Each structure stands twice: as structure tokens, then as C-alpha cells.
Length: 276
Image 1 (cartoon, rainbow, N blue to C red):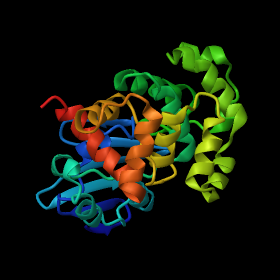
Image 2 (cartoon, one colour):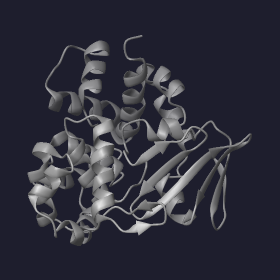
Image 3 (cartoon, rainbow, N blue to C red):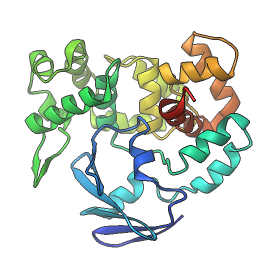
Image 4 (cartoon, helix red, strand yellow):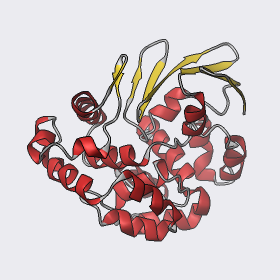
């Protein structure tokens, strides 16, 4: 995919490997808004606006280098799609979600966001994370940054309950006392399986949340988060199975290092067209 990096803008040429709706609505991020004529995305203390043009898209931001990495623009998704298209089960999902790219979001933000996401719906997740930004984040013009750990250490469990986290309030209160941003960065050096075991020791992080953090935060392509939609897909196209750990192992065995990419195409397709 061709693109041009400028000081306050990224120009993307072509639409076959980049589509903001596909990228933002496939379950990997919650801090975004569809504004009708453009999308707005928040990550850490940064903001980007994405507009469609005749030749592609323009990403307007004060930190184009950050969003070049965030949208994984250097990775050749055309080649990934070609490799995955050899699997019959992925042909329609890839055609449907052709513009998906796996984001490289801030690790601490991913950890907190996916603890909030457990057994939750997108509208409520966005509401909780928005309140978290507004009450503990730093004002950045017309938006608030995602709060750093030091700010989250200043509040009690009741605060998290008051912003709507429900039973997850105790997990959020505890996890910021277990881990910091630097330690998460240090864990990048671990193997995927060792990292998964570390993440599961954290408050509020189960196997599915761990896999989401591995894929959307640590960029590990050899994981396959299994939720209701993936379980439904598996029982529709494979042998009946309701043990999600077995489903996860079977799918990572099948797709290997491209498991995370396969998961995104299948998840997005099932959520949008699963009953067709």
C-alpha cells in the first residue's frame, strides 16, 4: 500500500488495504467515533481524523509518525490476504473485510480497555472509557488523554464503580497496583506463551482478554481470541465444540503465525453477516 507521510497528515493511496470502518469496527478498539463524513480515533494522548478522498484516505493528526505505526502502515496486508485466501473458510471474510488492519495500540490502554470490555457491550465500554478519560486524563484541546497509571493510582475502587465499571471495578483498582507501563514494555521480550501466562496472572485478565491484549497491544499474530462470535463460527463451519480453549488451540494450529489476522476477518464477517 502506498502512502505519504507529512508533518500533520498521512495520505493513503488506494482503498483495497485500508478501510477505517473495517479497522475500527472489528472489535480491536473502543476509543473512536463515526462522525458521518469522517472517523475520529483516540490513542493514548493523541487524536486522528480520517477522511475518505477520491484516491484513498487522509489521516489528519499532530503526530503522523505515531499513527503510521498505530495503523501498521508498513505491513503488506495484500500479501497477508493472499496467504490466508488459500483457506476456503476465509475467502468471503477477506472479501468482506478487505480493509482491516490490526492496530498497534498503547499497551497500558489496551490492558485497561479489554478488562472493561469483558462481558460488556461496545456502547457501554465506550461510555466507561470516555468517563475514565474525562475524569483522570489530561485535557488536550477538544479531547482528554488516556490516563497514566499514576493518575489511576489516586482513586479508589468506588471511583471505578461510579464510572460504570460494575464488577470490573475491583479488577481495575487491583491491576494498576500490579503492573505499570514500563513492565508491560519489558514483557515484549517474552515468548507468546510465556507472555500469555504473565497476563493471565493480572486482575481481571482471563484467557480471551489476554489473547486480545496479545494481538491488539503486543502485536502477536500467533493468537486467536475466542468469543461468542468465534465460537458460533467454529460450530457452524467445523465440528461441534464449546470448549473455547480447544477452539483456540485448533484455530492457532490451523492458521499459525497468521492466526490473529484470520481471527479479525472471521470475527468481523460473523458479527456483520453471520446468519447469512
